[in-house]
Length: 335
Ligand code: 5GP
Ligand code: MN
Image 1 (cartoon, rainbow, N blue to C red):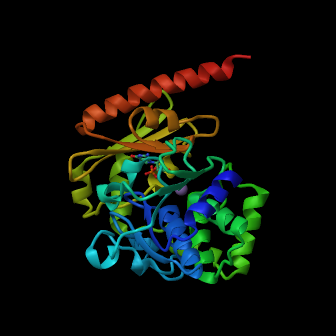
Image 2 (cartoon, rainbow, N blue to C red):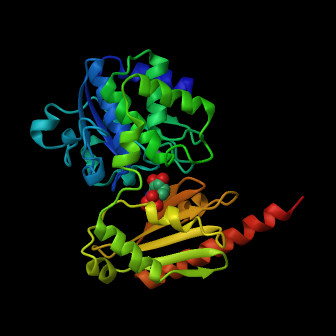
Image 3 (cartoon, rainbow, N blue to C red):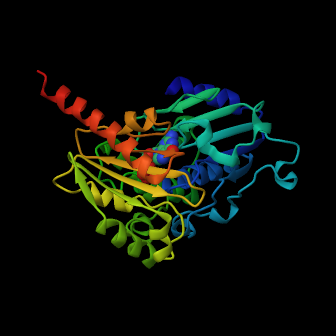
C-alpha cells in the first residue's frame, strides 16, 4: 500500500489536468470516492474533471451527501472539457477497465492510469494500483491517500468520503468494519461530514416505483438448494414504470432469509443484456463465480453482466452458484 501511494505521489508530481472516472451504474462509493478525490486534488491546485457514463444516481443528487455532484459529466472528451488533454487518469471503484464503460475513451490509452479500488477481483490494470480488498470502500482508500500525503480534508471532501464509506458498509453493518474505520469516520465527521444525512437521504431510501418492482420481484421468489432468487424481466419493470437504476437494496434484503446462503437477482435491461447481482451470507463467497462469468465484486457482494436471454442467464448462474456452494460447503466440512 505505502509503496503504491509513493508511486502515486511521484506520478502526480507535475501533472496538472486530471480525469477521475468511476464505474457504470455508479453507487455511493463510486461517486463519493470520485468527488472526494476531486475536492482533495483541487485543494492541491490541480484541474480536475470527474466523469461517469451514467451520471449521478437520483438519491445522490444532494449537496448534503455528495457536494459537487452537479459537476460530474457524462463525456470527458468533449473539446471544451478535454482542452489540450489529460496528464493523468484515475479509475475509482472499478475492478476492470471495461467497467468504466464509455467514460473511458480509447484516446486515453497513452495517458498514465491509476487504479484505486477495493474489489478482491481487481485486475491491477493501472500503471499504479492502490488496491486493498480489506478496505471497506474505495472512499476509505482515498482517505488513506490523503492521510499518507498530508493533504488537508475540507468539509466537502469529508462528506463525499463518508458517503462512500457509509453506503458501501450499509452504515457500518458489515464484516470489514474495524475500529480503525470508525476512527476514520469520526475524523470525517469532525471535519464537517454528516452521518445522519447519508443514512436519511441515501441508505434505505427509494421511490415508489422501485418498491412496486420489489413487490412483483418478491412475488416470484424461488428457493433452490439454499439459493434464494428472482428475475426481473422488462415487462415487470414496465408494470411499475420503474426506470433502470442502481438498487442493491432488494438483494441485501433477500440474503437475510434464514433458509438461504446466497441471494440472486437477474435483471433484464432495455438493451437485452442481463445484470446479475449476488449476495452471500457469512461464510460464503460469490466473488469467484462473478469473476468466472466475466464480472467481479467482493466475497459477500458481486455481480456480472451476461449477453443471454433471461431464462438462459438464470440457468447458467444457478448452475455455477450450485457448484460453487457445494464446493464451499465441502471445504468447510474438511478438518
Ligand atoms: P450490485 O449487486 O450492488 O450491483 O453489485 C455488487 C458488487 O458487485 C459491487 O461491488 C459491484 O461493483 C460488483 N459488480 C456488479 N456487477 C459487476 C460487473 O458487471 N462487473 C464487475 N467487475 N463487478 C460487478
Ligand atoms: Mn465500493
